[in-house]
Length: 283
Ligand code: SF4
Ligand code: SF4
Image 1 (cartoon, helix red, strand yellow):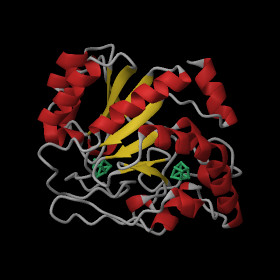
Image 2 (spheres, rainbow, N blue to C red):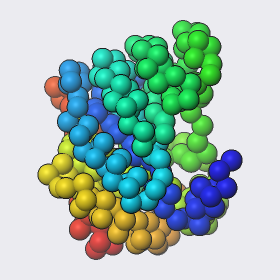
Image 3 (cartoon, helix red, strand yellow):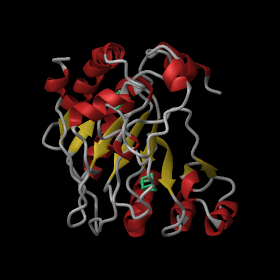
């Protein structure tokens, strides 16, 4: 256990040690709780719109905060575009500021063997969706036994198809009885990481696309990082406060409602309405 990181998380202090990257949102598996509301669609052949900004942000964050950065790649099902995921892995291998790639996948789509061959045991973790596990997935997990684990998170995100009032909502008992503001029932943006959202050309405060926008692909990485550091000082507390006032199951409910998030898989592109940072400052 990393004591420093655990302590930072407990106190709600930013960890500045990870960045999430989503090149596309498409996914055929339709989990009813899908927190990002992914729908079947056809992702772009070369979904690299956010890649340059991503690597610039990694380098800047490393320079400013001194941490090596975990890169979390999710979607959607990132392995729908295996050649792109492998191209990205080659670039990660040449980037010493990235400690590890965390690949979120069902293992039902294309195999990540090529990525494993590039990054090896030390620099790859494969995080498998437990709800889509079948015999084929179990076999694949055995083949990647050194790096593959089932996704485990005590926090249920009441967003996307898991939003309050939707069939996929599975909020647990802790999310109903813990006071808002304690770990498990508070905005976790400080211990998450910003999200580079390739399809919508936006950068968000936490790993979820429902979170406030801290920049767009037209902004400089310096400006985005500055917005990120500033936002982390106030926005999580503001969201927790509003969640308390509205008696929400979890503060992410505020973000989900505020963004009017709703994906529509039209011609391979999920889209939704999203709120920029200045809107959130009015909270
Ligand atoms: S596999 Fe993941 S991205 Fe796809 S629908 Fe399920 S939860 Fe959503
Ligand atoms: S409350 Fe909003 S900003 Fe905080 S973790 Fe949830 S989605 Fe992210």
